[in-house]
Image 1 (cartoon, rainbow, N blue to C red):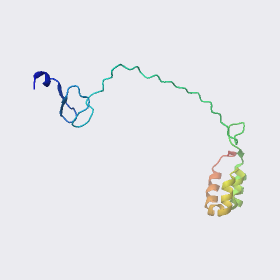
Image 2 (image 1 turned 45 degrees about the vertical axis):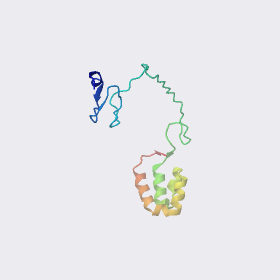
Image 3 (image 1 turned 135 degrees about the vertical axis):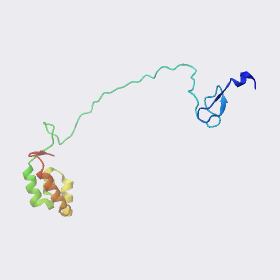
Image 4 (image 1 turned 90 degrees about the horizontal axis):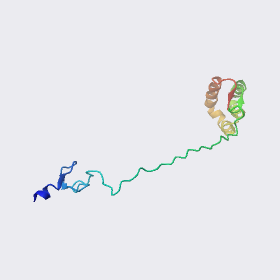
Length: 129
């Protein structure tokens, strides 16, 4: 091996194998030894950001004050206490599906009525649904 050929060798920084000086990937372990050299310098990519949010809140249950439908706490508590197993308080709040479920399950086997009664007692008056 001549002196010129010996100076054209380098070692892989991952496995220590002797590789050609121009090599970018080690022939023994297959790992990249140095950064790829590009033929022409590339300019930084131009990024275009369009942040134009034109979403409009179109909730149908929202009245002019930005809240939901106003409900009286004590009406809901009385309905829950006396007709909770029929889901009357759910119908009052406008939750028709839950009201039907309460009818067929007896107020979610009375456990749902108890939970709703406790939750209603801790709500402010009036509350918004």
